[in-house]
Length: 481
Image (cartoon, rainbow, N blue to C red; front, side, top):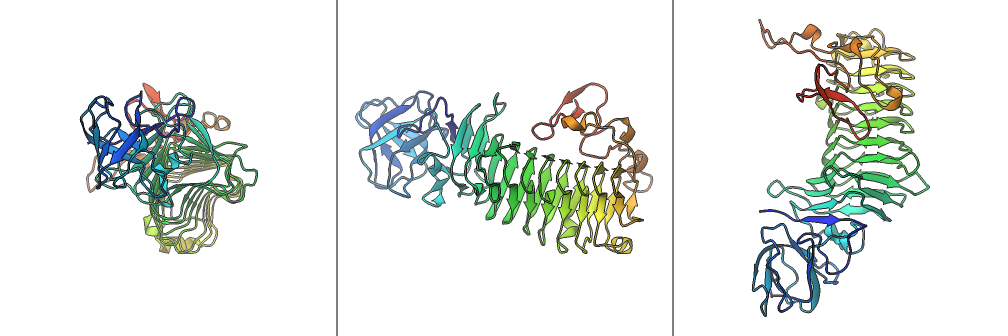
């Protein structure tokens, strides 16, 4: 069965009490909705033609029941009596029973997600909102609104019907924009299986001491995909704070100009930060990993021009056997490309990263000796170290480093956010010389470039890593040589 997609557009929509946002473009409306005792059958105004309302689950009816905590949206699964004395809808989620004389509507477009009624989709009287697993709230092209307080998303999606999703329209000509005016948490996922995708966030509060774009501090399972949090004036204090439990996936996003870090990984949970563009953030680092007992994959990111380190790992007690840092580019950060300031770095895997033009070391194990690194099973393969002010790495020598390069990446246009590499690093990553030994006598070959951006050859198409980074991969879909 289909699920409702609640459409939102500030220019063309309305938050009136007879607009549901999911259903016919021209809404079907009335003023005399009544529910049966069970709340699952809704009788609407006599004579109403409801034959054009889908009953496959894609339409939702809104009933303007203003009692705090009562449901206002429900998915339509059946209808009967169109045009007669008692036209009725069957709904999937029960309303309060025995209602009468309520304004109602099916279809049209809502005008906001943060308005008093619209917000009930995600937060109904500090409890789970009306949107159910599988439902989406879709911000149309050029939608723009200002929200003055935390936008809590309280209901969990599930593995049967799917996540709760807040998204921009795919391929929108103008990216939807949500502007928060508070100096505090902005979007706050509070449950599992929630997806946030394809829109922009800004913060206009002049005080940049508490504003967090995504505060993941509850038991959540949030996926943040293709979201832009990068305005040089209307910036945030931090882009993401991960301090709850569960998992967080952050992919294809841009985080820039945060007054503090772009992302703070501060909980014993599962992190995946993939293919993000992280730049011009203040304070200590672009990415900061402070969690005890965390597992993380940090892959394919460009961390550029941040104050402090590109990535800083400050804890001595992470679940290092589950930390993979691979194919990232750390360039022109004012301190180190990566710094590990804790003594316990057991089992870290650092593979095919580029550390270039940083103001400190390319890679700094500041609390660890070379002998300790050997004994702790650190893997450092295929990385390139170029023009770092304090040297390629600390300590020196770094015996665990294998297939190390010290070549100029010859970025296409780093100042213009294009970190595509030149020919110097072509196939210089690990495995060495292309041989991938999958057993004795293996004749399998793999040619890999270090860094987030792989070279293109022959015919090609362009894909943007994050929002504004024109990095290129091959037309065949292969990220690589």
